[in-house]
Length: 162
Length: 100
Image (cartoon, rainbow over all chains, first blue to last red; front, side, top):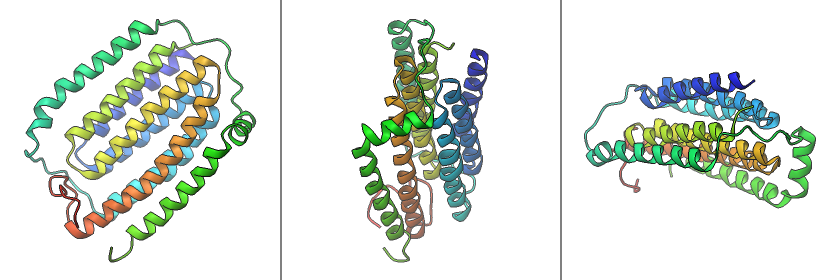
């Protein structure tokens, strides 16, 4: 089991590098689908079966279809390199490296690499549903309002004249 | 089993890659995809902590984050299409003012 985690962690990192390094948006989108599926496998290995299925259906399915559709609709081709943001180019890399090292150091320092807790939570759909509709029922209802607003916003934005 | 620190390390690496793409890419759609990458890195940390603490609340948060990400993708891509219609460009150097 553990070896699968590291295999798919490597897949996720390589595909994420590909998302960042590809110059054509379609290739980035396809690499991002690989990242999302690899993360779904990690969820499965972390006893989050429901989240893994949601990840594949909603993220890798619906959201990425939307992305690929927009990329093809707008005919987004090769990215033209530009030299207007010098600050990000020269300052970004050292700051990011510092952030990465600091975060990894903090994880390594304060969370000793002991194994995960042996008791896995009961994470079936019944348990998730019970928690969602008992403890988190107000956020759940607010989410429906959020989605309604998002639908209205998308319709307004897609009108011919803003 | 996998230690929590390894899950968090993977999450950190994915998050930093997302930030790197956000800073260095010029195409607005690619930048948007890098935001999704960052959201997923945070989701992975949530699930790791939920597993470590033996509670389901972290997974519920991930559920809500995915819903918000779906709404964000719909509105964001609508904004991108509207921008493209007025500016005829996807390069963020051409999209540096909010006014249409």
